[in-house]
Image (cartoon, rainbow, N blue to C red; front, side, top):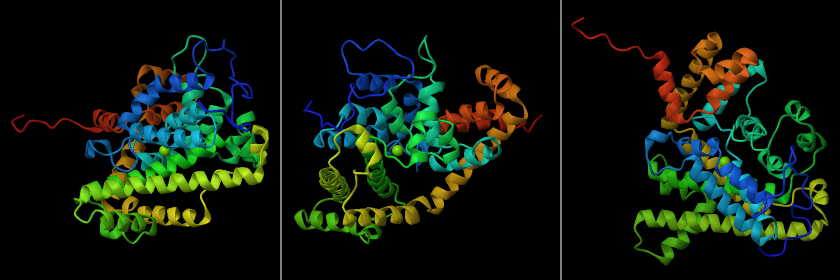
Length: 378
Ligand code: MG
Protein backbone atom coordinates (compact mmCIF):
# COMPACT_ATOMS: atom_id res chain seq x y z
CA UNK A 1 0.00 0.00 0.00
CA UNK A 2 1.21 3.49 -0.77
CA UNK A 3 1.88 5.93 2.03
CA UNK A 4 -1.37 7.21 3.58
CA UNK A 5 -2.15 10.93 3.76
CA UNK A 6 -2.04 12.44 7.28
CA UNK A 7 -5.83 12.94 7.19
CA UNK A 8 -6.57 9.31 6.22
CA UNK A 9 -8.19 7.02 8.77
CA UNK A 10 -5.61 4.65 10.26
CA UNK A 11 -5.55 2.08 13.03
CA UNK A 12 -3.58 4.62 15.08
CA UNK A 13 -6.22 7.38 14.89
CA UNK A 14 -9.25 5.03 14.90
CA UNK A 15 -11.81 5.38 17.68
CA UNK A 16 -11.79 1.61 17.83
CA UNK A 17 -14.49 -0.97 18.54
CA UNK A 18 -17.30 -0.82 21.10
CA UNK A 19 -16.02 -3.99 22.70
CA UNK A 20 -12.25 -4.11 22.94
CA UNK A 21 -10.66 -7.09 21.18
CA UNK A 22 -7.08 -8.30 20.81
CA UNK A 23 -5.40 -6.81 17.73
CA UNK A 24 -5.50 -9.07 14.64
CA UNK A 25 -2.29 -11.01 13.92
CA UNK A 26 -2.07 -11.00 10.18
CA UNK A 27 -4.28 -8.19 8.88
CA UNK A 28 -5.27 -4.64 9.70
CA UNK A 29 -8.33 -3.75 11.80
CA UNK A 30 -10.13 -2.52 8.68
CA UNK A 31 -9.30 -5.68 6.75
CA UNK A 32 -10.80 -7.56 9.67
CA UNK A 33 -13.97 -5.46 9.38
CA UNK A 34 -14.18 -6.22 5.65
CA UNK A 35 -13.72 -9.94 6.32
CA UNK A 36 -16.43 -9.96 8.99
CA UNK A 37 -18.82 -8.27 6.57
CA UNK A 38 -18.09 -10.79 3.80
CA UNK A 39 -18.74 -13.71 6.19
CA UNK A 40 -22.03 -12.31 7.48
CA UNK A 41 -25.39 -13.85 6.62
CA UNK A 42 -26.76 -10.47 5.55
CA UNK A 43 -23.99 -10.15 2.95
CA UNK A 44 -24.87 -13.49 1.37
CA UNK A 45 -28.53 -12.51 1.19
CA UNK A 46 -27.61 -9.51 -0.99
CA UNK A 47 -27.35 -12.00 -3.84
CA UNK A 48 -31.13 -12.31 -3.93
CA UNK A 49 -32.05 -8.70 -3.23
CA UNK A 50 -32.54 -6.13 -5.96
CA UNK A 51 -32.99 -2.44 -6.46
CA UNK A 52 -34.92 -1.86 -9.68
CA UNK A 53 -35.45 -5.27 -11.24
CA UNK A 54 -36.85 -8.04 -9.07
CA UNK A 55 -34.58 -11.05 -8.85
CA UNK A 56 -36.66 -13.47 -10.92
CA UNK A 57 -36.86 -11.06 -13.87
CA UNK A 58 -33.53 -12.18 -15.30
CA UNK A 59 -30.14 -13.55 -14.31
CA UNK A 60 -28.11 -10.84 -15.99
CA UNK A 61 -29.39 -7.93 -13.94
CA UNK A 62 -27.42 -6.55 -11.04
CA UNK A 63 -28.28 -7.75 -7.59
CA UNK A 64 -27.31 -5.90 -4.43
CA UNK A 65 -24.38 -8.27 -4.11
CA UNK A 66 -22.87 -7.46 -7.50
CA UNK A 67 -23.76 -3.80 -6.93
CA UNK A 68 -21.84 -3.81 -3.62
CA UNK A 69 -18.81 -5.40 -5.30
CA UNK A 70 -18.89 -2.73 -8.04
CA UNK A 71 -19.13 0.00 -5.38
CA UNK A 72 -16.15 -1.49 -3.53
CA UNK A 73 -14.09 -1.60 -6.73
CA UNK A 74 -14.78 2.06 -7.58
CA UNK A 75 -14.26 3.22 -3.97
CA UNK A 76 -10.96 1.36 -3.65
CA UNK A 77 -9.48 2.87 -6.82
CA UNK A 78 -10.45 6.39 -5.75
CA UNK A 79 -9.23 5.90 -2.16
CA UNK A 80 -5.90 4.52 -3.34
CA UNK A 81 -5.35 7.40 -5.74
CA UNK A 82 -6.08 9.94 -2.97
CA UNK A 83 -3.75 8.16 -0.49
CA UNK A 84 -6.65 7.23 1.75
CA UNK A 85 -7.44 3.99 3.57
CA UNK A 86 -8.47 1.59 0.81
CA UNK A 87 -9.45 -1.20 3.23
CA UNK A 88 -11.85 1.09 5.07
CA UNK A 89 -13.42 2.35 1.82
CA UNK A 90 -13.85 -1.28 0.77
CA UNK A 91 -15.41 -2.36 4.09
CA UNK A 92 -17.91 0.53 4.04
CA UNK A 93 -18.83 -0.19 0.42
CA UNK A 94 -19.43 -3.89 1.00
CA UNK A 95 -21.61 -3.15 4.05
CA UNK A 96 -23.53 -0.11 2.79
CA UNK A 97 -26.62 -2.01 1.58
CA UNK A 98 -26.82 -4.78 4.22
CA UNK A 99 -29.99 -3.30 5.73
CA UNK A 100 -31.96 -3.15 2.51
CA UNK A 101 -35.42 -4.68 2.46
CA UNK A 102 -36.50 -7.02 -0.34
CA UNK A 103 -37.70 -5.25 -3.52
CA UNK A 104 -35.43 -2.19 -3.25
CA UNK A 105 -36.92 1.24 -2.75
CA UNK A 106 -40.50 0.03 -3.07
CA UNK A 107 -39.91 -2.39 -0.21
CA UNK A 108 -38.25 0.22 1.94
CA UNK A 109 -41.11 2.69 1.43
CA UNK A 110 -43.69 0.03 2.25
CA UNK A 111 -41.91 -1.04 5.43
CA UNK A 112 -41.42 2.57 6.49
CA UNK A 113 -45.18 3.17 6.05
CA UNK A 114 -45.96 0.03 8.11
CA UNK A 115 -43.58 1.22 10.85
CA UNK A 116 -44.94 4.80 10.90
CA UNK A 117 -46.30 4.51 14.44
CA UNK A 118 -43.41 2.39 15.70
CA UNK A 119 -40.34 4.52 15.02
CA UNK A 120 -40.21 4.15 11.22
CA UNK A 121 -37.80 2.23 9.02
CA UNK A 122 -34.63 3.69 7.42
CA UNK A 123 -32.49 1.30 5.37
CA UNK A 124 -29.28 3.05 6.37
CA UNK A 125 -30.06 2.71 10.03
CA UNK A 126 -31.03 -0.90 9.38
CA UNK A 127 -27.58 -1.59 7.86
CA UNK A 128 -26.12 -0.34 11.12
CA UNK A 129 -28.57 -2.51 13.08
CA UNK A 130 -27.40 -5.54 11.10
CA UNK A 131 -23.71 -4.99 11.91
CA UNK A 132 -24.29 -3.75 15.48
CA UNK A 133 -26.99 -6.14 16.63
CA UNK A 134 -28.68 -8.59 14.31
CA UNK A 135 -25.80 -10.76 13.07
CA UNK A 136 -25.27 -13.70 15.41
CA UNK A 137 -21.80 -14.97 14.61
CA UNK A 138 -19.69 -14.33 17.69
CA UNK A 139 -19.73 -15.90 21.12
CA UNK A 140 -18.75 -12.69 22.86
CA UNK A 141 -21.02 -10.06 21.34
CA UNK A 142 -24.06 -9.33 19.19
CA UNK A 143 -23.40 -8.09 15.66
CA UNK A 144 -19.94 -7.78 14.13
CA UNK A 145 -18.37 -5.28 16.56
CA UNK A 146 -16.94 -3.18 13.71
CA UNK A 147 -14.64 -0.17 14.09
CA UNK A 148 -16.24 3.25 14.64
CA UNK A 149 -15.08 4.51 11.23
CA UNK A 150 -16.70 1.61 9.37
CA UNK A 151 -19.98 2.17 11.24
CA UNK A 152 -19.72 5.93 10.65
CA UNK A 153 -19.41 5.26 6.90
CA UNK A 154 -22.36 2.87 6.82
CA UNK A 155 -24.62 5.52 8.34
CA UNK A 156 -24.93 7.85 5.35
CA UNK A 157 -28.10 9.64 6.34
CA UNK A 158 -30.04 9.70 9.53
CA UNK A 159 -32.98 11.71 10.83
CA UNK A 160 -32.28 14.06 13.74
CA UNK A 161 -34.55 12.01 16.02
CA UNK A 162 -32.67 8.80 15.36
CA UNK A 163 -29.27 10.54 15.45
CA UNK A 164 -29.99 11.76 18.97
CA UNK A 165 -30.28 8.13 20.11
CA UNK A 166 -27.02 7.01 18.50
CA UNK A 167 -24.54 8.77 20.79
CA UNK A 168 -21.10 9.42 19.29
CA UNK A 169 -22.13 7.97 15.92
CA UNK A 170 -25.15 10.27 15.53
CA UNK A 171 -23.29 13.43 16.57
CA UNK A 172 -22.30 14.55 13.10
CA UNK A 173 -25.93 14.78 11.97
CA UNK A 174 -26.74 17.08 14.88
CA UNK A 175 -23.54 19.15 14.75
CA UNK A 176 -23.29 19.36 10.95
CA UNK A 177 -19.96 17.59 10.69
CA UNK A 178 -18.64 15.30 7.96
CA UNK A 179 -17.59 11.65 8.04
CA UNK A 180 -14.09 10.52 6.93
CA UNK A 181 -13.01 11.03 3.31
CA UNK A 182 -13.15 7.24 2.92
CA UNK A 183 -16.86 7.34 3.85
CA UNK A 184 -17.47 10.25 1.47
CA UNK A 185 -15.80 8.25 -1.31
CA UNK A 186 -17.95 5.16 -0.65
CA UNK A 187 -21.03 7.36 -0.94
CA UNK A 188 -20.00 8.70 -4.36
CA UNK A 189 -18.89 5.25 -5.52
CA UNK A 190 -22.40 3.98 -4.70
CA UNK A 191 -23.92 6.65 -6.96
CA UNK A 192 -21.44 6.10 -9.78
CA UNK A 193 -22.12 2.36 -9.66
CA UNK A 194 -25.90 2.47 -9.63
CA UNK A 195 -26.38 5.25 -12.18
CA UNK A 196 -24.23 3.41 -14.66
CA UNK A 197 -25.50 -0.09 -14.03
CA UNK A 198 -29.08 1.13 -14.14
CA UNK A 199 -28.32 2.52 -17.61
CA UNK A 200 -26.91 -0.88 -18.59
CA UNK A 201 -29.71 -2.93 -17.00
CA UNK A 202 -32.35 -0.46 -18.24
CA UNK A 203 -31.14 -0.93 -21.82
CA UNK A 204 -30.90 -4.71 -21.44
CA UNK A 205 -34.47 -4.85 -20.16
CA UNK A 206 -35.70 -2.78 -23.11
CA UNK A 207 -37.42 -0.32 -20.76
CA UNK A 208 -35.21 2.51 -22.03
CA UNK A 209 -33.49 2.92 -25.40
CA UNK A 210 -30.15 4.26 -26.52
CA UNK A 211 -31.93 6.95 -28.58
CA UNK A 212 -33.68 8.21 -25.44
CA UNK A 213 -30.41 8.16 -23.52
CA UNK A 214 -28.67 10.14 -26.24
CA UNK A 215 -30.60 13.19 -24.98
CA UNK A 216 -28.61 13.05 -21.70
CA UNK A 217 -25.37 15.06 -22.11
CA UNK A 218 -23.17 12.71 -20.03
CA UNK A 219 -24.23 9.74 -22.16
CA UNK A 220 -24.28 11.65 -25.45
CA UNK A 221 -20.66 12.79 -25.12
CA UNK A 222 -19.36 9.23 -24.66
CA UNK A 223 -21.77 7.66 -27.12
CA UNK A 224 -20.73 10.03 -29.92
CA UNK A 225 -17.06 9.30 -29.32
CA UNK A 226 -17.65 5.55 -29.36
CA UNK A 227 -19.71 5.73 -32.56
CA UNK A 228 -17.11 7.95 -34.22
CA UNK A 229 -14.21 5.69 -33.27
CA UNK A 230 -16.01 2.40 -34.00
CA UNK A 231 -18.73 3.00 -36.64
CA UNK A 232 -19.47 -0.73 -37.14
CA UNK A 233 -19.53 -1.83 -33.52
CA UNK A 234 -22.54 -4.01 -32.61
CA UNK A 235 -25.10 -2.29 -30.34
CA UNK A 236 -24.32 -4.34 -27.16
CA UNK A 237 -20.67 -3.39 -27.35
CA UNK A 238 -21.56 0.24 -28.02
CA UNK A 239 -23.54 0.18 -24.76
CA UNK A 240 -20.77 -1.47 -22.75
CA UNK A 241 -18.06 0.77 -24.19
CA UNK A 242 -20.19 3.86 -23.46
CA UNK A 243 -21.00 2.84 -19.87
CA UNK A 244 -17.35 1.95 -19.23
CA UNK A 245 -16.29 5.41 -20.40
CA UNK A 246 -18.99 7.09 -18.31
CA UNK A 247 -17.75 5.39 -15.13
CA UNK A 248 -14.20 6.42 -15.98
CA UNK A 249 -15.22 10.03 -16.73
CA UNK A 250 -17.12 10.36 -13.44
CA UNK A 251 -14.39 8.73 -11.33
CA UNK A 252 -11.64 10.80 -12.97
CA UNK A 253 -13.55 14.05 -12.47
CA UNK A 254 -14.28 13.12 -8.86
CA UNK A 255 -10.60 12.41 -8.18
CA UNK A 256 -9.39 15.64 -9.80
CA UNK A 257 -11.94 17.90 -8.07
CA UNK A 258 -11.41 16.17 -4.71
CA UNK A 259 -7.65 16.64 -5.03
CA UNK A 260 -8.25 20.36 -5.58
CA UNK A 261 -10.63 20.56 -2.60
CA UNK A 262 -8.22 18.70 -0.32
CA UNK A 263 -5.34 20.98 -1.40
CA UNK A 264 -7.49 24.06 -0.71
CA UNK A 265 -8.64 22.91 2.74
CA UNK A 266 -5.28 21.31 3.57
CA UNK A 267 -6.55 19.23 6.51
CA UNK A 268 -3.80 18.02 8.84
CA UNK A 269 -5.80 15.37 10.67
CA UNK A 270 -8.96 13.27 10.41
CA UNK A 271 -10.61 15.61 12.94
CA UNK A 272 -10.02 18.54 10.57
CA UNK A 273 -11.68 16.50 7.81
CA UNK A 274 -14.72 16.03 10.04
CA UNK A 275 -15.11 19.76 10.78
CA UNK A 276 -14.33 21.01 7.23
CA UNK A 277 -16.85 21.17 4.35
CA UNK A 278 -17.19 17.95 2.32
CA UNK A 279 -14.08 17.58 0.15
CA UNK A 280 -15.01 14.63 -2.03
CA UNK A 281 -16.99 16.21 -4.87
CA UNK A 282 -17.47 16.47 -8.63
CA UNK A 283 -16.56 19.61 -10.52
CA UNK A 284 -19.64 21.87 -10.87
CA UNK A 285 -20.04 20.92 -14.56
CA UNK A 286 -19.89 17.17 -13.89
CA UNK A 287 -22.21 17.53 -10.92
CA UNK A 288 -24.81 19.09 -13.22
CA UNK A 289 -24.33 16.33 -15.81
CA UNK A 290 -24.71 13.47 -13.37
CA UNK A 291 -27.85 15.11 -11.95
CA UNK A 292 -29.33 15.15 -15.44
CA UNK A 293 -28.61 11.43 -15.78
CA UNK A 294 -30.26 10.70 -12.41
CA UNK A 295 -33.24 12.76 -13.44
CA UNK A 296 -33.54 10.86 -16.71
CA UNK A 297 -33.43 7.51 -14.90
CA UNK A 298 -36.04 8.63 -12.39
CA UNK A 299 -38.50 9.65 -15.08
CA UNK A 300 -37.89 6.97 -17.69
CA UNK A 301 -36.79 3.92 -15.71
CA UNK A 302 -37.83 4.07 -12.05
CA UNK A 303 -41.27 5.40 -13.03
CA UNK A 304 -41.73 3.11 -16.02
CA UNK A 305 -45.15 1.47 -15.77
CA UNK A 306 -43.66 -2.01 -15.70
CA UNK A 307 -41.33 -1.09 -12.84
CA UNK A 308 -44.23 0.59 -11.01
CA UNK A 309 -46.39 -2.53 -11.39
CA UNK A 310 -43.69 -4.64 -9.79
CA UNK A 311 -43.25 -2.02 -7.07
CA UNK A 312 -46.97 -2.01 -6.32
CA UNK A 313 -46.92 -5.80 -6.02
CA UNK A 314 -43.87 -5.63 -3.77
CA UNK A 315 -45.49 -3.06 -1.51
CA UNK A 316 -48.58 -5.24 -1.18
CA UNK A 317 -46.48 -8.27 -0.23
CA UNK A 318 -44.65 -6.30 2.47
CA UNK A 319 -47.70 -4.67 4.00
CA UNK A 320 -49.64 -7.98 3.95
CA UNK A 321 -46.80 -9.74 5.76
CA UNK A 322 -46.42 -6.93 8.29
CA UNK A 323 -50.14 -6.87 9.02
CA UNK A 324 -50.47 -10.61 9.50
CA UNK A 325 -47.45 -10.90 11.83
CA UNK A 326 -48.50 -7.89 13.90
CA UNK A 327 -51.98 -9.39 14.32
CA UNK A 328 -50.69 -12.81 15.34
CA UNK A 329 -47.06 -13.24 16.36
CA UNK A 330 -47.54 -17.03 16.54
CA UNK A 331 -47.19 -17.08 12.75
CA UNK A 332 -43.58 -15.90 13.03
CA UNK A 333 -40.72 -18.42 13.07
CA UNK A 334 -39.56 -19.15 16.68
CA UNK A 335 -36.60 -16.78 16.89
CA UNK A 336 -38.56 -13.75 15.67
CA UNK A 337 -41.61 -14.83 17.69
CA UNK A 338 -39.55 -14.79 20.86
CA UNK A 339 -38.25 -11.27 20.14
CA UNK A 340 -41.75 -10.10 19.17
CA UNK A 341 -43.28 -11.35 22.41
CA UNK A 342 -40.43 -10.46 24.78
CA UNK A 343 -39.30 -7.14 23.36
CA UNK A 344 -40.74 -4.91 20.65
CA UNK A 345 -43.22 -6.68 18.36
CA UNK A 346 -43.15 -4.14 15.53
CA UNK A 347 -39.34 -3.96 15.47
CA UNK A 348 -39.03 -7.76 15.51
CA UNK A 349 -41.48 -8.05 12.60
CA UNK A 350 -39.66 -5.25 10.74
CA UNK A 351 -36.27 -6.97 11.27
CA UNK A 352 -37.70 -10.27 10.04
CA UNK A 353 -39.18 -8.70 6.89
CA UNK A 354 -36.15 -6.48 6.19
CA UNK A 355 -33.91 -9.55 6.30
CA UNK A 356 -35.91 -11.36 3.59
CA UNK A 357 -34.67 -11.72 0.04
CA UNK A 358 -37.06 -10.91 -2.83
CA UNK A 359 -37.86 -14.55 -3.48
CA UNK A 360 -38.16 -15.44 0.22
CA UNK A 361 -40.72 -12.66 0.68
CA UNK A 362 -42.69 -13.88 -2.35
CA UNK A 363 -42.67 -17.46 -1.00
CA UNK A 364 -43.53 -16.42 2.55
CA UNK A 365 -46.46 -14.43 1.23
CA UNK A 366 -47.63 -17.46 -0.74
CA UNK A 367 -47.21 -19.78 2.29
CA UNK A 368 -49.39 -17.53 4.42
CA UNK A 369 -51.98 -16.21 1.98
CA UNK A 370 -52.36 -18.73 -0.86
CA UNK A 371 -55.01 -21.38 -0.38
CA UNK A 372 -54.73 -24.59 -2.43
CA UNK A 373 -57.31 -24.92 -5.13
CA UNK A 374 -59.95 -27.49 -4.29
CA UNK A 375 -59.96 -30.17 -7.03
CA UNK A 376 -63.04 -29.90 -9.31
CA UNK A 377 -64.20 -33.44 -8.51
CA UNK A 378 -64.35 -32.80 -4.78
MG1 MG B 1 -26.05 1.13 -2.87
